[in-house]
Amino acid sequence: MEGPRACPTPVKPAVVRVRDYRRETHDTFTLVLDPPATGGAAFRPGQFNMLYVFGVGEAPISLSGDPGEGGGWVHTIRAVGAVTRALARLRPGDVLGLRGPYGSSWPLENARGRDVVLVSGGIGLAPLRPVLYHLRRHRAEYGKIALLYGARSPADALYLDELRAWRAAGELQVLLTVDRGDPSWTESLGLVTALFDRADFAPDRAVGLICGPEIMMRFTQREFAKRGVADERLYVSLERNMHCAVGFCGHCQLGPSFVCMDGPVFRYDRIRTFFEIREA
Amino acid sequence: MTEQGILGVFAGHKFLSGLSERHRLLLAAGARPFTAAPNQLLAKEGDTARCFYLIQSGHVSLGMHTPDRGVVPIHTVGPGEEVGWSWLVPPHRWQFDCRAVDEVHGLAFDAEWLREKCELDHELGYHLLKQLIGVLANRLAATRVQLLDLYK
Ligand SMILES: Cc1cc2nc3c(=O)[nH]c(=O)nc-3n(C[C@H](O)[C@H](O)[C@H](O)COP(=O)(O)OP(=O)(O)OC[C@H]3O[C@@H](n4cnc5c(N)ncnc54)[C@H](O)[C@@H]3O)c2cc1C
Image (tube, protein in one colour):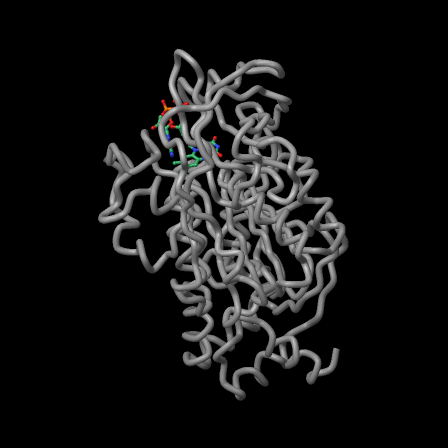
C-alpha cells in the first residue's frame, strides 16, 4: 500500500466546475470535474476527494477515472442521501467545492510482477477502476489479471460496456455476476465469491484488491484464505462514513487508525482485528 | 473418452480431489462424457434425478419455475463445479431446472448406480457426502448473504 499524501490546504475547499455528467444506472451517475487551477489533476488509484455541494454538505467520493490521463477528475456516485442526491442534480457548468485528493492508494508498486485479483461489489468498482486503467496501461509489468465483479442486477452493474470491451481485448479476465438476473443476462448468477473457482491466478504470487460492502469483503477474504493467499497480500478499501477527512473529528476511527488519514486502502492483516468492529 | 481420459478429467476436478486411487477407478467405470448445446435442458424441476453432473467447461444456469415469471434463474454453475445433489437426497427429484448457458462439456453419472456404489462402499459414500456438504454449505452461506441484499 502506498501512503497517504498530505494535503497543503486541508480544510478549505477549492471551487471546481462540472465538465460532464453521465447517467450510469437508475441511482448512479458519473461527474467529470475540472481539477482545481492549482495542484493539477494527478492522483493515485484508491484516493478520494471531498465533494462539497454548497448549502448541503460534503461527502468523500473516490476518484474513478484513468490516473494516466491528465483530463478531468472522474467520480462515479450513488445517490443515497442528502449530499449525493444534490450531486446528482449538478450539470455541466455548475460549480461545487472540492478538497483532495486524500488518502492511501492501492499497492500497484508491490503488485508488479504478480498476479492481481480485483474483487468488487456494487459501487465498490468505482475506486478500483483506476487500478484497471493502470494495469492495462502497464500490462507487461504484471502477471495474470482477474476482475470479479458482483452487482445486485444487470441494471445495477457499472461500466459493463467498458468491462466487456476489456475482456474481448483479452487483456484481463473479467468475471461478472448478479444476485438477480433477467432474461438478457447470460453471465453468472450468485455471489461474487462463487466466481473464485473460475478465476485464473496463482495463489502463491497473487495480490488481492477488494472493495465493496463490508460483509462481501469478509467473505472474499475467506475465499482468498482458502486458496492460500495470505492476509499480507490482501488490500481492502474501507469506505466508512467520515466527516473531516483530515484526522480531526474521529468519526471514521478504526482502533488506532483513521480511515481518512491511514486509509481508505488498508493491508488486510493490519486491520483484521478491527474489520468486524461496527460503525459508530 | 478412454478411461485414461476420464481419469485425467477427475484429476483436474475439485469435487473429486482427495479421492483414493481405488475409488477413482471405481467411479471412472461409471462416468460417461456428455455435451449439452446452449440452451439445452439438463434437468427439469420435479423430474426424477437420474444423473449427477461434473462440469468441465461451459456454464449451467439453475432456475426455479414461478407462475408469473416463468423460470427465474437463481445460480450459475461453471467449470470445476457440479450439478445436482437430488440424486442422493430422497425423494430424488430435481429441485431446479438446469439449463446449459453455453456449450457444456463434462461427465455424467447414473444416479442409481452411484447410490448403489455409495451404499456398498461407505468410504466412497462418506467422501462424496463430505464434498457435497461443502458445496451445500458454500451455497447456503452465499444465499444467506444474498438475502441481505448487500448492494441495496
Ligand atoms: C473513502 C471513501 C470513498 C467513497 N467513495 C465513494 C464513491 O466513489 N462513490 C459513492 O457513491 N460513494 C462513495 N463513498 C460513500 C459516500 O461517501 C457516502 O455514501 C456518503 O455518506 C454519502 O453522503 P450523503 O449525504 O449523500 O448520504 P448520507 O446522508 O451520509 O447517508 C445516506 C444513507 O447511506 C448510508 N451510508 C452512508 N455512507 C455509507 C457508507 N460509506 N457505506 C454504507 N452506507 C452508507 C447511510 O447509513 C444512510 O442510510 C465513499 C466513502 C468513503 C469513506
